[in-house]
Image (cartoon, rainbow, N blue to C red):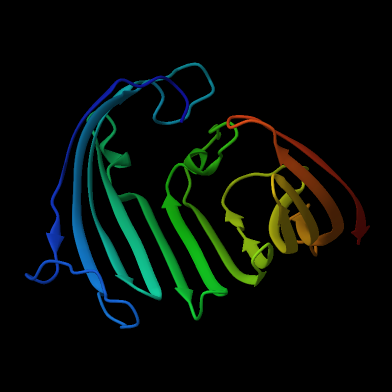
Length: 255
């Protein structure tokens, strides 16, 4: 959001643990020890925005914003399965511009699921959703936008990890994160990536081979372009706090 802001916040969180019995670690060879946790979230903040209308004509009018943010966070853990989720809703009240006040100024939701069918095979997926009335919230680079408008961002990232042997690990993952409502201009926007990699560890040395396909969107109404790449990397930890890494490869465009 354009302009400066001064903000003070008061937040409180309350934890409610499902079940009255204390958690006991599972015994070896026994499936059990599942644990659930639910955390209601609540936050209140008041800040000042020097340009809430995102006016570029120079006649900016500041406003004080009161934001109430209720939410909930949940967690479930067992020896072979874990699930974490979170949802937060922002209710906003503008003192000078009441037409901007809304009960759904911003919504954010995340989920993270992981399961292991065996010691060598793990599946994971995480996803995030955000909806806002200020698209600049979704612009990680600059945070600038020229108009207030509804905007959404959805991303998902599933992955499979296989421990081939004690020193070799294979990974297949996919990421997709289209953005709705933000202006990309003529720049290429990455909307998806599929990656297969295998890495082997030899003492302090790590050798990794990656094969990936990336999807780019140049114009909203045009089909996506693809880039196929093969990258080989090597790294070595030379001290406890420093390592050296070399990477190289080739990329081929498919249009």
